[in-house]
Length: 201
View 1 (cartoon, one colour):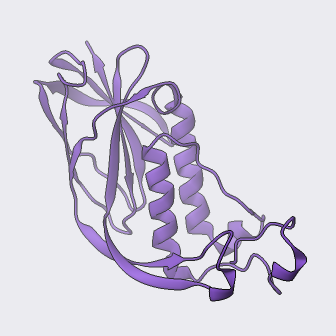
View 2 (cartoon, helix red, strand yellow):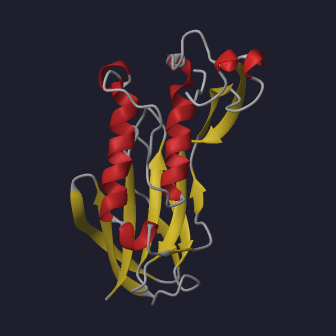
């Protein structure tokens, strides 16, 4: 902090630019990265410095995990069509959130507040070949097993097929689906993410 561009007028330049935010805002960072991932955005960072790999190891590992999954699931997240979101039954938690204006109001400095968010985010994507993947990202420090409900028929799938998990380790078959109202219960490690791919037989 604060966000800063060297092309801004010198009188608005911070005395010490690009200081790291307090670690208490790490959950907010995870939330913003998870939200971007399930919405299909390429994971990105601005103002990255190699020192962050040691100073913010957990946060950088999360970004890299999401980037690897995004790379393996581009037929969905880049070339696919976003569908109506699945229903996710997951715990929620209250986080410390920061607010810092990028272009205006720098003189006011950082303000903070608390807000409650679900610990697992999800979105559904249909690839050009008509298969579907549910993008799932956890922002919890604990293992979770959320319940993800998805209408396969409304998504254009037949009533049976295979379920595959795509994550940082690769792609593997984990089961089958049958019926039009699917309930998926992925096992998620702390700060985990994956694509649950639904492919017709």
